[in-house]
Length: 350
Image 1 (cartoon, helix red, strand yellow):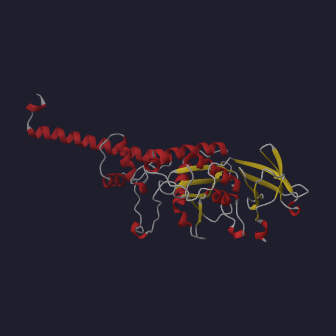
Image 2 (cartoon, rainbow, N blue to C red; image 1 turned 60 degrees about the vertical axis):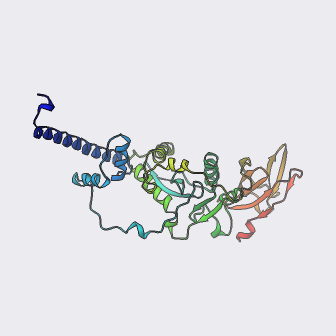
Image 3 (tube, one colour; image 1 turned 135 degrees about the vertical axis):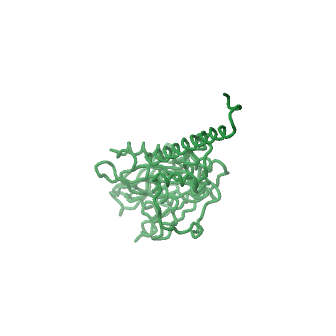
């Protein structure tokens, strides 16, 4: 007997059985996706699972239905009433590159060896611009990372950080190499209020997401292994992970969707950038080759023997001490062998 010849009640029973089977298969897939995301250290909420079902070209149930499946299967732990989202005041840049957030956080390698991770994200799109593991973060490291992402993504209009010594020397009445680099490029430097980490909330939240992923990975034995884990995480976070704050779009798609913001006053965005290490000689000078001439930069005899780092951007030279604080800066005059400083930051730090 074919299906057309069967009684209506029997056809209805067969149809109901098929729907139950499909419903059971979909529920099992929901649980599988939840386990896969959890084991990998990724976001595993109901909305994220719904996006993954859609990407598999399945017809997903509503978010609330997925939540009920997870609750019924024992994956949901009841929580006290949270503060409503409407009570938060949130700021979001209207364009990519309008504001970048940066911060440093700590992590531990195998054997309890502490290291540091520097993260840069785009405020508008949440795109992770860089996530770099370092033994200890110095000002020059921040400058180097910033330069590399400027080459890849362009120069931002502003950068928001906390008041850490790798970002600012205002508490020491000086300027770091990072601050002078932002000034050179016309980038506005913004700093969070002291003891108020919520100002940099997006990069702080990124730290949490990153660390949840790292905890699910085998403990890295060295920086190279940790950097490989970070690179894999950033690829997933930028291009695969459906972000809740972006209407379940990926940071990469949101970043690419709109025109990019630029600095309001770019002083010299195409300058050649290089770094030179030296020690102030007994005469109070350091040397720098510019073009075909060896120039002598006056640092003062009081700084004799001081180890310094020189950040060179064409004719603009900034000299930093080992803590990354600006000591002096120069504007090179190619016609003179001896270069007088354009400014002395040390005198302002006493």
